[in-house]
Length: 73
Length: 261
Image 1 (spheres, each protein chain N blue to C red):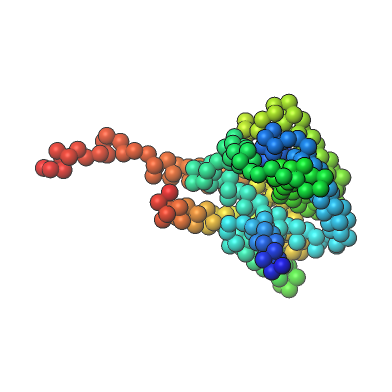
Image 2 (image 1 turned 90 degrees about the vertical axis):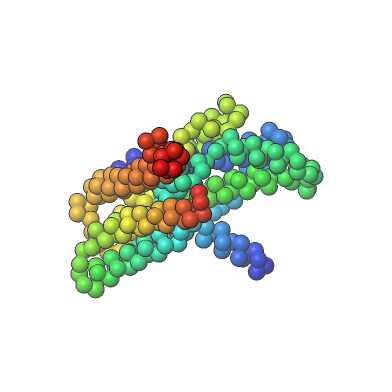
């Protein structure tokens, strides 16, 4: 039962998060900061999430390329 | 917002997943028999229909801001995965998705697997192969169709796009009776990754409480910005890859006689 639950959890993790959890973490953090700025400080930070997501993509690609170079690929 | 981008995004995303599912069903059907393969397909479609019937109306009950925040975050994370893979494949840092190779591996495994059925299923291997393949690829279809449809409050258009994609791919599979290897899968995945990420950014930001300059028209800037950044990244990585794997030119190679001097 435990193994099955773990397998289900692993499937959903892989499904939504995938190979690099940092991308999902950046998305979550950017949206959280956008919400805080909008609701607590009255700042309309519409630009924050696009910039953060594109930076996360670049970061993730850089990590993937470096990892492959280290492994000799 | 116009339903055309919604329809096209869901259609292309679903078509890509349907191509992958078709490869597995064909491998099961042509090597082990069509009856268990189609039983697996039918069972997976039934499970997917139940998931859609439960999740679709449940998501529609959520307030639009909450829904867009959650769906935006999920789509942006999901879209980043698609984009990352498509860029790495384009630039040669990851192997291309090879439907012909996958089909060959699946048929070889299917031929060597033991026969035997359970109850009304005459061949358990073919049934589970087809069931798992369709269910796993279909979950992505359901995820994309439901999130897009509910955020846009137009589940009908999303469902229609998903069904149309499955019908087109299944029809092509019936005609060709082979994996659809000529479909430019990586290019389609790149395009879908751009759309998923862009809509994720757009809806997530709206759900978080910020408002876009120009409202819905902002998508006309977000989509090209994501596409341009991803395209640039793909080109840069491809050049880096080519530079690192290219053999040294004669001008760069120092002959042994030169080094000996």
